[in-house]
Image 1 (tube, one colour):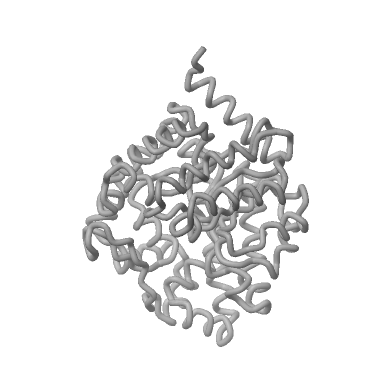
Image 2 (cartoon, rainbow, N blue to C red):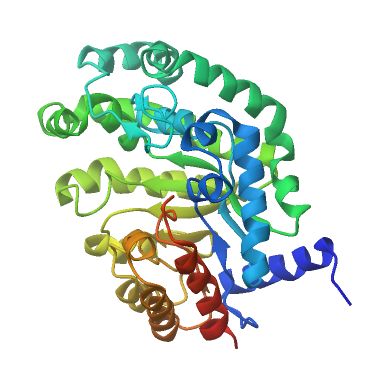
Length: 380
């Protein structure tokens, strides 16, 4: 008898929750993650993906159906919501060139590395607050046409976002993105200037970063409640261990992650630690976090096998099939990576996923290999 979407959803939710709790599963769950891949695979342009949120979300849902026809999948890592470039702009206080606007319609979006936030802006934030400065900097970085589309769509659609995936039988692991203020200010100041600020005026930097904590904490809790999806990406890019010296990392990065994550977990928000780049130096510090409220999600740069050896059953992980293999490798290489990862990490406390996101130009044969290999090697 064919199962209904409701029955499939219940099975998939149960499989995901067991995997996250280090319980035995019938197979390693698989989550899709490819916001750019989905629209391209459905015949849309990257310009459509960036400026037509309804089309982008429908492409995401249809892609889940397509993959499920290859072999059963369980859901999606992060849900498609709004205009993607606007989310990047909010995260990094940086302008983004967008296909269909500044770029040709099928050229990948590009984040500007430039000094938008000036040194005197630290004083403005200290005197007026983080939220006041958000209103000052937004007009400098956002495309007005795109942000208007984004804001209208988010207001109308966020409350039903989780249900739109679940009605098709798929569970979204997370529905929003948050971060520590280090990431935001680093984007606004530009990397080189911000890193110098951390050495030249550390007390002022620290004061500003502290003022940003409520913004990102409240955004994560509010977004999770609004969309009905328990999990939130806690982003880490420029704050990675191989990007920042221990002196700076231990003052401006790690204490902020601990505070943010502890507050989110206390509010029943699951933290998907979307930690791109290499975090090997500080993996032991992850033991300080409420592990069962977190999921470690790396991009192929961090040694995930070493992380599992250190963390044990303290924190579940997402598989990290690298973007380079997906976009430029062969199906055999994809299959071998999945096989070896499951063999080395084991079948509990693991969900198979791409490292960061599946590239928009990933060949279908490699996508098929990723899904099929998870079934072949992930079954109990």
